[in-house]
Amino acid sequence: MPIHPPFLVSYSITTQCNLTCKHCYSEATDKPAEDELTTKEALRLIDELSDWGIGLLVLDGGEPLCREDCLEIASYASKKGIITGIGSNGTFIDTAMAREMKAAGIQSIAISIDGADAKTHDAFRGKSSAFAEALAGAAACKAAGLAFQFNMVIRKETAPQLPTMLNLAVTSGANAAEFFDLVEAGRAKRECRGQSLEPEQRKQVMEWLAQAQIDCPILIRVCACPMYPLTLQQRQIQPKHFPAQMLARIPYYGRGCAAGMPSGYIVIRANGEINPCMLLQINLGNVRQQSLRQIWDESSTLNQLRSRKFLKGECGRCDYKTTCSGCRGRAYEQTGDMLAADPACWLAPVIAR
Image 1 (tube, rainbow, N blue to C red):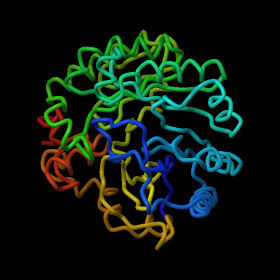
Image 2 (cartoon, rainbow, N blue to C red):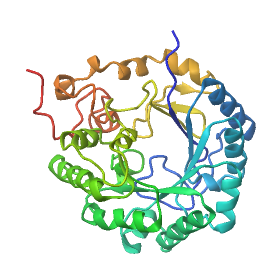
Image 3 (spheres, rainbow, N blue to C red):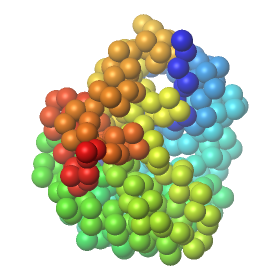
Image 4 (tube, rainbow, N blue to C red):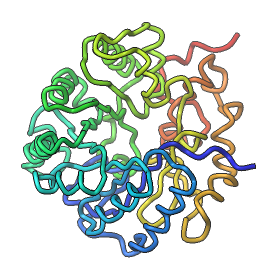
């Protein structure tokens, strides 16, 4: 029986990037991979996504704007009726590029900001002017009337900077602040060792973000931490600047980890390989050999992810296993078992009696 498609598809159109970010989940380099999907293959993939009824497509990389046909792919997807966004480091975005992206039908840009200042951001991203260029890119988007958000990685080094980072998103005109709870996958396995938050520190950070949402005029989202929406609900957070119902747009809200889930999330890598999530880098198959829908419907790995009864350890016993379920990517990276308990969780004692 066909399974309801994901709402969000992330397609990493290239592994090429002009930066060398320490946490890069794609392990991007300064050159594209030889086996990346061709333009023809990419457009055929967009046809399948459109026919499948995908709601949101994010083109990322690497740096998607390094690929010459990026806007062609984006425009094709947009004309097919798919809401299309781009995840970028912002360094290639000037006024002309912002206008071109808007003309191509791109509806939102996610610009990576990984520190409250140039010193922190540039050291993490491997280029001395990256911070200034990313902020200039955000300003160009704002001038062109192109919606953008800031994507910001939370790690031990930047945890004390979160108030300033959040304020930077607000004052820059972002419509959302999306924080990524660092998972040591991809290049981060080597270059971010020990930078992931400890459970108690994570609890404090998530409680601070939840409290900050009350007065924050933009939506705060957190990826790789399904415990965050639980914190919002437990604290009965009521934002002052928008209806509380908008909090349900936060990843994992009420349903837990979205990796490979119906109405959830799936990743297509540059060479056509399918992963449940950019953080859960398990090869499910390749669109060059199978249709994405066939992989989605028939994958035994996805079938295991979708049934919370297979969760192990404290995640399997927890009262919140259906509304949280832990980060499956972090569990996999730290234990080798995608169904193991999430070692980042501070809710472990809350188990069914």
